[in-house]
Length: 341
Image (cartoon, rainbow, N blue to C red; front, side):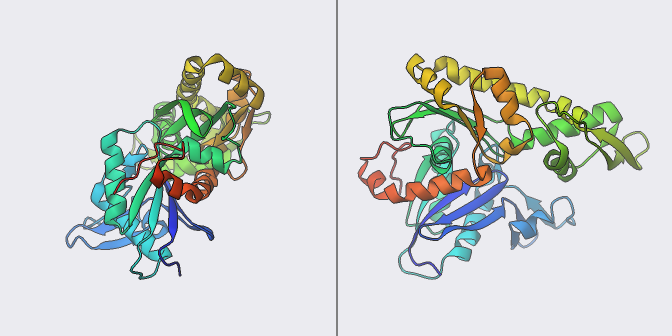
């Protein structure tokens, strides 16, 4: 058990990762909460609650309390954080300090909601770090040097694009197009082309197993079950990897547009650094097959997928825990350097 430790939290739309100082990542749970509507009792959090999505009776609701990278249901987020902290801490008079990741484009009101939720969940103090900074640290990039590095963090709810130098974000953009939007794009495509409705879990499974952002050398086909919109009955149909790529064209274009926008607004010296150092992809959404190839083809900048891209933000948050003391004193040029109580 951990007593009064510093804890880093990657509060993602799809997954919450908890990093404890000197322990590493100790918890990885889906961002889902199940509650009994009649009594208000919390029934399940994380993986157990995720299995209930779309399968609950009328008195039980299973929800994702975070949407597009920010809190959409404050009370449920607070209860989820409280449950997750309880799993990694034991009773102690000294409460833990939390360092929580936030998208680079969130408002001060949304920041305050994250801070308040952390405090109500049992933290002594709550600090914030922008996701691109944490992602760069987790990917092993030396961002302390006066060198420009571009990080594209594609999560579940948001894609954060940033050029980082000297431990600070020089230029950034956060868009609400990421893994969840890819799932919805495929659902819309199948509905329009095949007159069949598939669920979010089926769409996500297809994304993971055969989804692609760039044309594959060998096409992959698979049979999928859904509900026919004409008859209302179950129906099996075949879908190809090329069809899935077509479904993903629009969200991919919006991510590419955001990358171009950040590059256009970045000082020329740093753009030259980015051209030399390349673009680093992090986040679960970047694991989509061919995403690195697509970005490289469209920008003419070498693009690499970070090692363990899904956990980069959590590992970076863990590294930043070493600087919490500096953030308190306001001496470290890291993220927004806010001490909120």
